[in-house]
Length: 266
Image (cartoon, rainbow, N blue to C red):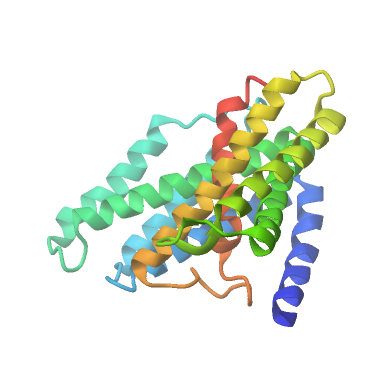
């Protein structure tokens, strides 16, 4: 527990000033996080099959391209050019022919990389896009994630009886999930209506926040299922006691993606 607390304090001491500063410093930090997240995504696959070093290099270049592509946007709308998509597809698929050996690099490996690069690249690009529009949106999404996770744990520990998905995450319960959603929604809605927009439709922001809280919990389960498939407890040990980047940002990644649906509605 002591290691876990120290690790969390150090991470917050680094992250909070970067979050508050925004601008180029934040964008560079997000790009580094995206690279580290992709490394974890590739490392966990290597528990079953090695990825060629050249393809790792190509993958890092592609995710940087995706993350940095949308930084100059002045509107809260994510867009990605077909040139970037083409580079992603060609960069991962053409080497299948070059290697011409499924033991080294197959079409399955290519689509694993395509999915991971596009998924993580889009998610982290949205982090930067949201921060460039203002700090308040980022805090709103982080609050939903943190409060939901915290109260899901507390509620589950106190009154949790019915397992949610024991094959994926044995400790999670329906009671914990409901408790986390309720508290995440209360705190998220209160923050949004007092800090971001007091004239927003109460029904709209409540439904949005409930949706994002639930999506965040699904994100946690999705990443848990990936770890279980590869027989790993954590994606890495970059944060002692907490795991890796993907272990800590699993719910936030899905919340940010879910928020895309409401960017032009709220």
